[in-house]
Every structure is written in C-alpha cells, then in structure tokens.
Image 1: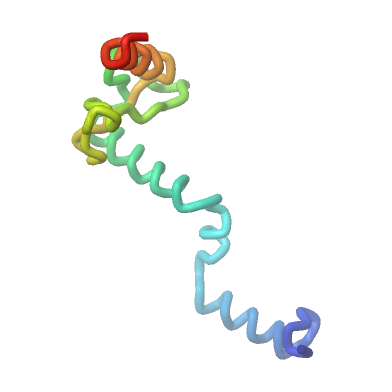
Image 2 (image 1 turned 60 degrees about the vertical axis):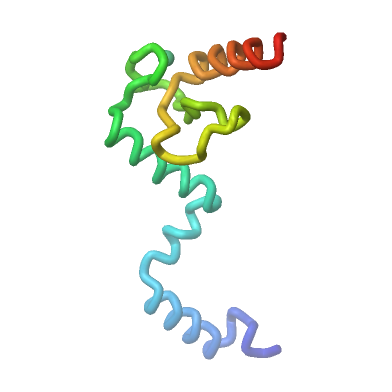
Length: 107
Ligand SMILES: [Zn+2]
C-alpha cells in the first residue's frame, strides 16, 4: 500500500497532522506501561498524605527504594484501597511479611 510508505509525502503530511493534533504524544510513549503510571499516581498520593516516611520504622524514605505495604495483608483479606496502603523501606516491608507468614503459616 503506497500511502503506508513513510517517504510518501501524503503519508508524511498525515503523520504531521496527527502529531500536531496530539500534543504530548511523545510523553505517553515514554511511559513504559500503565502499571508504572498507576504506581506513580499512588506514590504521589501517599507521599502527600503521609510524607516520605516508612510506615514501620518512621524513618525517612529519601534516597531509598520505596515499597508499597498493605497494612492489613491482602492474603488475610485486607482491602486493596488507599487506606490500607502505606510506604515502607523494602527491608522493613520484607521483615514484616516474613513475620506475618510465620504467624499465619507457622514457618
Ligand atoms: Zn523502615
């Protein structure tokens, strides 16, 4: 199909029109996927609500990787809502999930 050839002037004109009518299209391209985008929104919300603070040790999460922790674990019937999520250090979060597993499964 001739018009699909990117060197075809008509196709180039159509591409240009599309770009002009979709400002910011290249920004969307940068987002790897929707999950990354959603995580950014959740992080933004939690940082505004709680600050950049670990829910376990209350230490600063600055310069640290951030985990999202379910206060009441989903595995134990906790809801998947913002009220049930807080920020945590990866190490604090893992320590906690090990403790919960020990409590509930015995190992
Ligand atoms: Zn911590």
